[in-house]
Image (cartoon, rainbow, N blue to C red):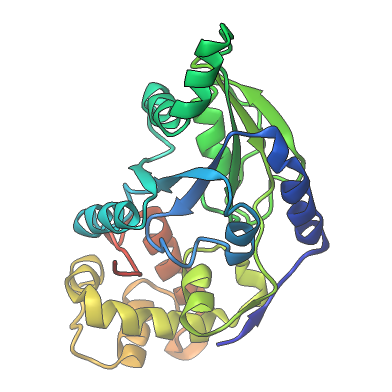
Length: 278
């Protein structure tokens, strides 16, 4: 499945990020723990590659706990500090600050030698749409400042936010890249980083069920009381019938059923699922 989606504001955001790098000490990259690889924008990674970074593995309450630990280790092996988080719960801001201060050891050492007492750390927050970036910022800043929504692209203006832990956050809109091919496009679509409205959600749902059959069959069985040994289409139709997603003459309403399944997955009702394995 090839997907093309590149709203005009995203090109502008790319330039804003590039121009704002000189203002910050560290890049905070918020990713979706269910798709740790696909939720990292390669264009932004390229732009910010010379800056120190901390990865915020967001939505770890929705992802597989075992896979979370594997991804933390994988990032560590690549020389990147990653922190597991659920932006809906209280975030340990001090932990983020201490990690950043450790990364910026040389800078603080020089400031100390010059008798400069500035303890502030400036961080740019980047992430793809629907990674939970705005919710994370509101949580860490202890306020309801940035607009939050479950639709991709809600945050569209640059914002500076001050926290109580000497952290200054530079918010940026969620940004994708022009073209997605193969599994990356599917992964972004599964998690709603790409708008459902531009997708063939029925075809997407079949592919999602195929994934679930292979890696999380028990989740399907427990949630929908079905036999996961059947074909993806048979499972799709059985879920539709069991959940009342039908139209006249008992025919399955595939669009309604797809929305039902994806709502279950995205809300965690289908269990803790990681699509990309470390």
